[in-house]
Length: 76
Image (cartoon, rainbow, N blue to C red):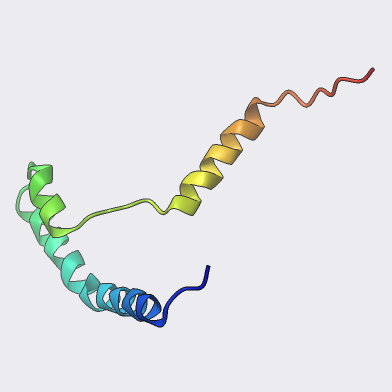
């Protein structure tokens, strides 16, 4: 299905906004960790959210499934 120009534009602008705000976010996280190492995770989650990309999760699942295979083929 074709993607609309508006959705492409929104994705592009969100990515640029993440790039622009990344240094501020990183410095904020570092300052929190320097001040107190026992900070609640809720405080950190308010500042930044870390999400594992879906394609990375799929790759790790494929690797685990391949390792379970014993490489034996049944023949008649």
